Image (tube, rainbow over all chains, first blue to last red; front, side, top):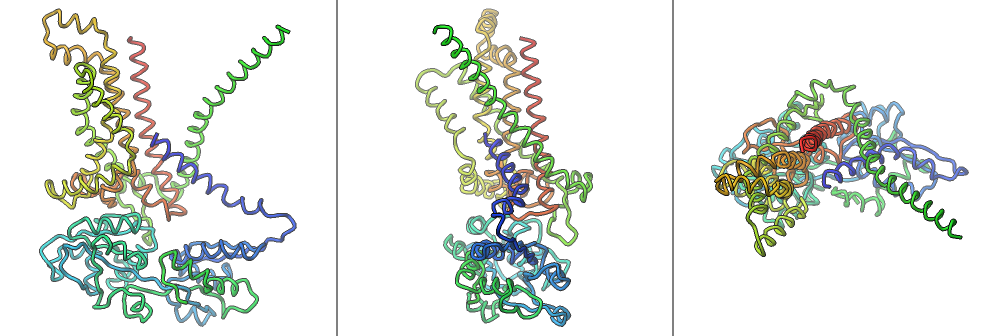
Length: 286
Length: 294
């Protein structure tokens, strides 16, 4: 029974993928002209963009927007070549991109909290220590001034935005582009599972989107300060807390009034848009 | 008048037969549809990933700059937890089945039976949570490692497959004709000798079928094992190490996967599907052999 159910779930998902493309067209009355727009870029921005697109299409009948997840760099390249009219980016723009006409608008902030099991005696790590711990180079708490206890890593699934952000900001910015997170780690599928496993495993350390940090502390986990800064929204806004970054949407030149891109950005920065930002576990900018 | 009513009755009868046939066809149709979809979604993987790398590489890093999709460690982990769980479950399950079919009487047997039925009805997420709360700390404190391990997954699976083996084996042991047992006793064999020389061997094909069905259940279980297995995509044959099975891999990566990664997950499902198909074919073969022999 269980087996059959699992297979059926997969099947339902499969049919959804197959038919997802066509359903929109057929449901649209023939007399309404469809205008298609292609946005794309960062996978971290994708959940915000897709939620916003859904709301935006309801407000603007006859507008059809797709967001292709290509990664920030390809997204910006496609924007500059004209394939996309708007790109999502989870990194700062490079100088040559700005001189080519790319213009960024900040839509959200992304911060990640590092938490440990209550058996861990330390309360602060430097970025370098943190990077070496998650790269698998430091495997015992005594190497960073704690007790003699093995470090148990709790990480997210590899394709999640949180995993990607953490790898970039903590590991690759500190240890170089080729560094990755250690594979010998408990992999948790969602924030709640991360929290449970940090709370129940002695010597555990893990990371979690800042918006979900309370579920770790609720289960008696401990938030760490990084480079002596605690993960608070204010510290992220002041750029003091190091594991954070801004999320942008990028357009060719400053968005002009009356264009669909400008309307979309306004929607992202409106209360409704920023509520979606918060709902997807990012920090709103407005 | 009378003719007419007979005609109506006949038509009703034939139409209800067609209706029943259609209902039966739905399940067959569903299986075919599932197979087509999984293959259709999974096959494109091999346009970009060589089938050899997929099957024999232990490197699963779908979001690396140069992504790798090797499921060998998951295949090994799947087989390992399935066999381990069988080793744990089989002695207990077989003994229970023999006790229930040969000795258990009255109220106590009833309680025992409903307990086993209850075990079969518990949702797997509950087993998973029980695993986190009880099995994982037990393994961590008394055996070693951090507790999230293939061993913990096997223990949970062993409990989950108990009812499958017990129920099927009990039925086939009960089906052994009393004359056989009576003859054995009459020859001077003790009850115990009768059980392991006559009763169990006579019921063997049913017992083997129950074991294979249980193997299928164990290899396909997802929710419970993903919570206790550690889920690390590493290759290890040591049971106290963390590991990831085929099912765990599918459910872990499903939510964000796209492109080749998504079809690689369907290819993983294809592999799982083949395993389960093989197990079921073995059951069918055993059943058929039994029918021919019997």
